[in-house]
Image 1 (spheres, rainbow, N blue to C red):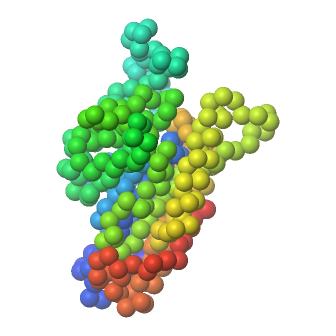
Image 2 (cartoon, helix red, strand yellow):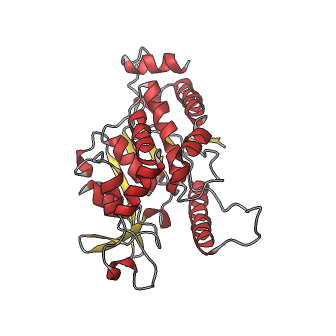
Image 3 (cartoon, rainbow, N blue to C red):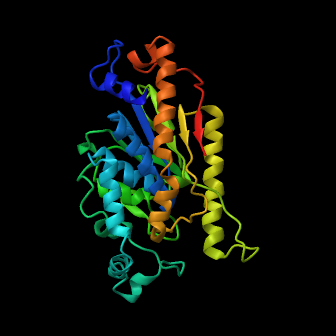
Length: 316
C-alpha cells in the first residue's frame, strides 16, 4: 500500500490530490540524533520530498544537509566516513585542539570547542553557503542567550546558523550572530514541530532527547553526566508541555536512550538500533495518508487544513 501511495503521488495522483505537504521536525540530542537518518531514508523510499524542515542542534545539522539536497543515504555515507574510522576521527579531534594556552579555557575554567571549526572539519563541505539556498525551506532553532528567547534562523550563513544551534553549553563556545550571542537551540525548543508552516498537511517529529539512564556500576552520576542528564530533563519538560497543547501527526522516538550525547564513536550501534524506524515511519505515514483520504482528501488537497487534534502515532 505504501508503494501504491508513493506511485500515486509521484504521478500526480489519480485521486485528484497533489502530493501531501509534509513538514519534518528533527530534534536535538547529540549523537542520538544520528537516528534521524532512517526517517529521512523512509521519505526517500516513498519518493516524498518534505515541504519544510525544522531542526534543533544535531537535527539542525542533519536537517540542513537534507534540505540542501542530500539524500538520507548521502548523509549516512558521510557519517560513516567521518565516524567510522577511529584513527581518522582522533586525527580530526587533534586538529581541533586549542593552539594557545589562552584559548584552552573559558572564563569559568572549562575547555570549550569552537563549533564553527568542528563543522568545517566534520561536514566535508556538505552544507550550503546560505540557508535560503536550500531547495527545501529550512528553519534552524537557536537560543538567544542574553534575550533569553528562541531565535529561528531561515536565512543567512548556513554553517554559522548550524554552529549556533549545536553550541551545547559547556562543550562549545557561544556563537555570535550579528549583535546576538547564540547557544544550543535545545534549551528553548528541543522538538521544533511548532515552527513548521501551517500549510503542512502532515507533521512528522523525531524526538531523540532521551532521558538519564541508571548505570549498573554506580548509584550517582558523575559531573558531566549529571549536567547532560539535567539538560535532558529540561528538554523533556519543554517537549511534554508542547505535546499537551498540540501533537504532530507522527511522533517518532527511536530506541536510543542508552546512548549518551557525545557517543559519536558508537555511530554504528546507534544506526543499527534506530534502523527499524525506517519501515515503521513508512507504515505510519501510510495510515495517516489513508486517514486523510478517507476524510475526503480535503486536508491534503487544501493547504493549511489539518484536524485540530490529529491522532498521533508514536514509535518507541
